[in-house]
Length: 629
Image (tube, rainbow, N blue to C red):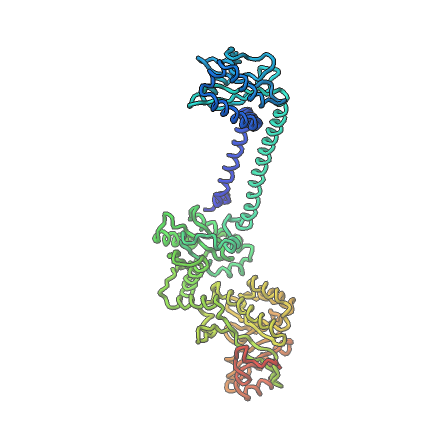
């Protein structure tokens, strides 16, 4: 699959465009080469058009003559009165552009005069008519079709109309109309203009075709450069975002591959070397794919594989994924003169023809992928609709996408006077009459693309509340990974006008990159947002990390707060946190304040803010005190 000419391999339409363009060039060359023939045909066309009036009028006159004389030839030869009358009728057709107008009749492959409207050098009835070389008289007799031709051999003539007079399906005579040189000159000018117009039209059409070919190439090659990674010539996420509806996913098996523990590579060797490694992995994977398969860079270290079902069954698909996994596992990569070994975890969906959209297909592959990651890495998992946990995850996805997400709000108050400082937005999912809490939601979405999707939904939900209520202040929870997501940072930047009333609480995790998170925090603070570390003192918290983050608030985890009445270690720990925060100009918020005894201890430590059932439970927005005092 990896090929520097992949632009043409994946864009067959360009072959068709080139073929059409070349065909047009050959057509133009052919037309130009045969221009004389077409010019002659065009002359005849113009001549035919110029004699239409004479042709139609003569038809009526000739029909009258034939109707009145059952034997047209004998009557005109033997009856002078008939002959004279018919010549006068025929003479009515004469005008300044006509030199001669007469009727001939054939006998034994020869022509003789029958009627002649000339006043001088008049052909007498029965007089032999001398045929000119190459004249089409005999051809008209046989074909019974009128002809016009240019009199090249006569100086005073222009062109001639020969019209057959037919009776009982036999040519009994010919009407001949000789037009003057002046009439031919006028038509020649028209002909010259017409030929010029046709030639110019062909040239313009040629130029237009070339322009269209160039434009199509330019537009699509520009898209190609946007859609493809120039280092690997593989598709990127932009292509996927703009072509979800165009990809016929039912013709593919789909797999999502993820480089295991890749963040460690970036941490140890730097992002630049990490990017080099990604390129090497992509080229390795691509070497096992066919031209009909697609590899799309789904995220930094994740790749979407669309494996064409054509000439590949399910067993072949599974064999291919295993070959890709083994190739990466056994291959060593060079970074900074060191050998690096990697593994891939993959999630796949085989029955793609059962799905409604490519997004659903990717989601199921993603579900299978992270199911594998929970049980270990360097594995391949296949989506199984029978597994309860996966079904539940599918249900969560449907609920989130159908706007069943809501937030309850718990007050955070000043410990000294119980005045309201702001509300914390707590995520809930409405499932009919049931309410699903975060601890039942987030573990099943962790490390999946739905997690960031859910975060955006929470932000958008609360932005609407802030814009509809100018008094309320709200804090929302973001994970450390959310702060490294450009689309989430962009969403917050777009709503920076609300930063004085929208606080950001950061949830720590084991793999947090404090250097990168600090950069994101600095960006948010530039927009005016206040930053809080949530659930501090539990899990992965480290007091030293506070020195690396520019935070405004520190929220002490409720599991410690609720023990300070009985546990000396919890008591000492909270006291130390409070002292450290005060010395570093950080405000402290305590969770799980359930009674006055806990409140009084926190007051003695100088803790500024608290939340818990002692103040109020979390409520829907509609049940809040709208004064927000």
